Length: 114
Length: 112
Image (cartoon, rainbow over the protein chains, first blue to last red):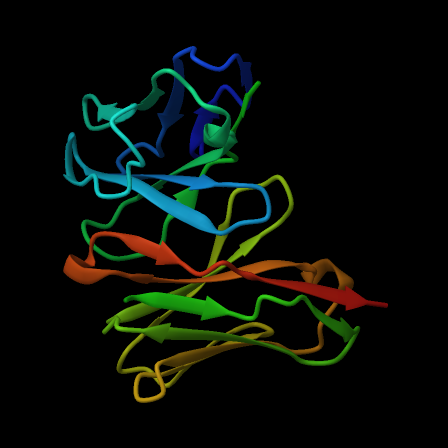
């Protein structure tokens, strides 16, 4: 597709379960970002990839959160032992620029932890 | 500490008027500042980027200014339309230039 694709679009899970969120960036985009947006709040930076490496993981809220990117393309954000406060929309964005420049966002994955 | 502040209250204006949104930042020295639009249930969409050596940038009905002395950017929408109603986010790169940090956004409502 032409844009950033995220799946699933909606995920409802029980507290304590693990979840995986997937992001397919725009082909050729080297930079990939994950953000979290809680209801009515701004975007909270989680992690940034340049290629397959993550120079900045400073935003990951706890060690229950991890992310990887393979082949310089698809990225997976994994949340282990989910908690209710993890409920949010998880947004992925990609960019063709190495350092600065505009981001192209997906529509997000809405996670609800019961 | 580093902060990006946008008007927390919604801005309500009449159709045809100019909307002006403010973005103030503290303890950043950005070379670039960006503005995005976000509609409910959607991801943000890039609108404009302005560089530190540019005082003003225009795109159709949009105008952005960037004052590095005041540490402020203003975002204007002229001849506003109900379709302009959305949340507008400013963003800039943090230290090391590899993390785009967003303000909380300002909700704009344009009434016909």
